[in-house]
Length: 229
Figure 1: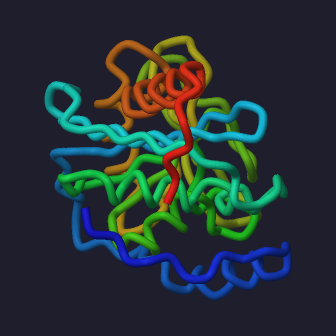
Figure 2: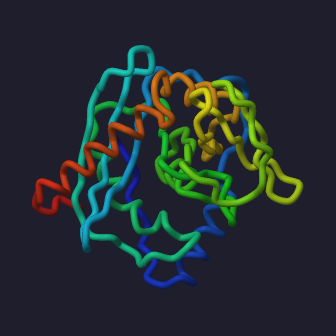
Figure 3: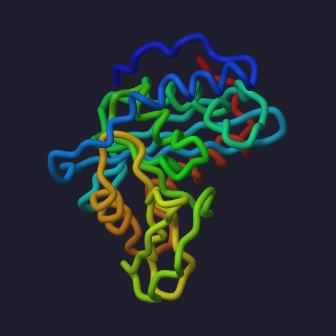
């Protein structure tokens, strides 16, 4: 798929924070109605020593079959800094998207969108850079507070930071811990939760995340050569 070239990549924390501040205003939170989604791309990154594997797996939302997948092996492009984690992973994830022959309707990140200290998590960053709708489905809460949702699948409660709703704690399976859904770009929270439930017919985490995780970990285990941009 066609993805615009990345801007010069920041080398320092100050430069990275300036990028977040500049791009945050480009996040599109308007919605003219529910997003039409037929294909989704799950994105995940695994690490081993000084290497990473970024996986992109495109699924058909109706039957959850794999449409296409891509894997990129590289080295992290930025040190680990809380709140700036996207800068470690984005170059490899963007390269993975470039290697696709199809353009998915929705990107699903193993992380967060608005539910981020600067309201600009990985899902926001990916959405702005690609122009595609994007959401985050995180395993753990990053910011804010929430009331425990009901025990049944589909129950949810708002995640709030101050007086702002930044996402939802969503129960994807009865009796299991919730996941944390937030909007990244060009998507609404209702659609984000509805798609997440369609992607979790059996397990807590979306199939998009599960399959991308398996692909990335497998590539590292096989010690494949680096294939980054």
